Length: 217
Length: 379
Image (cartoon, rainbow over all chains, first blue to last red; front, side, top):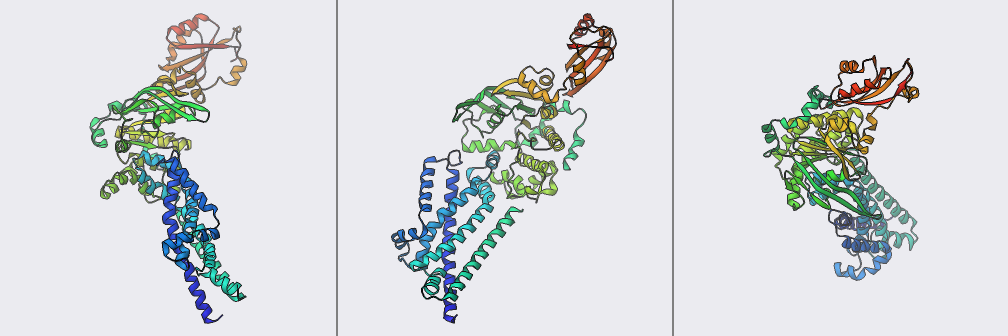
């Protein structure tokens, strides 16, 4: 590989990291409150609002139903509104976040729902208010599952970010398509695949380690 | 195990002392609970109806009950009898659909959120499955009620140490609950319930998930807490042995209604309701099989009459019994318990001969006697 190609791969790797990192950050910031809302606003929850719960639940399902490549295109007007452009790393972050948020919210929701109702009852019995229950019971008790869910989300976002390359977002997927596929450069293709595998392994390992630490205490 | 430390406090007169909790020094209670010497609960025609797919289910039906301060009050019933619902109306984890609950004379149904939070800080609760937060250490679990109440950190530390010492877990403060045994977990639960100096402690099947030995150590800890701090303890259980071990009064629930209520010795000694008898069944000795096989309905020449004597309060006077029988008396089987200082139980005796007058003389002594049958001489 030429030095330019190594440079290009390095830049693409950074782009992928920025895309995935920023979208994962947004997915957590938006997805976690969404998951808490879905769990606590249901009938019998601590913030009961069954109608809003149903509406939000359907919205989440709607976004989850649309394949990422379709969402990417369908969101172009919204992306332009937010970032002022439809190409490049920052433009890709918008659809990536929109896709990852409901995905992560549903996974986090499962972990939050798994928190034993007896713990919430115990917290109420010692005089916890609802915000205390969120801070001291639901979030810490579900944390291992939430971290595990975040790992899954990031890994699937690394995959999705490669598709974003198709609309000119840059990143490793873009390099693989343009050089590896269109110019038959097998070495580049292999290099990209190796980098992606390494990336996924690192993320998965970090996530598993964090979950194990939290679970074995 | 740490629990054994409390066994030293259990003296032979333990039953009496539990029943005589009203005699506790009031000054100590004041010191322990801050200001009030209180802890009464009153249920007034409390009802609870659930709506389920199968229609309305009546879990509680017009419950009227007063729990005096400082007692250990047992609520017993089969599963589904409504005992858990009843207990949860005391701190409003469950809202009654009719009637009202009064704590220290104050109706709690009308309390707003702030009032409810304050009420719950006066009422501790422990659970069958302990319900400890797995992400927090023992110390953090026990400190939580104070932390969410806004108590300054400098006060929380010493208070947590104090209650951990009380339950015998001072060396486990930094451990996570997953490292503890069931008995230790329940001790943490008790410490968490006591840390805000409540006047009432609700126990929801607190020993049902524990082995018999640990159950006894937890029960003696509860009795010790009741005596030392003067806290009213309301416990629900499906095991009569738990009631016998520590309660002074008991109410038997059956299908959401009160079947029977009274001092434990009386309910145990002369159970009136079939539900009570059913619950007592595991504690009652059946007629021994070999004896049952030889029993005959009619007198046997040269044989003996088998009588069942039931004690509910008075310890049987054996010499008076023998004198009244006017014939040799053999003790076949006996199980007499002492509950709150009273003799409760049954015994089987064989009185030689088949003299109906002997039975009448025994009845005249005020003994509760039932003729079971007759046996041949060699029994």
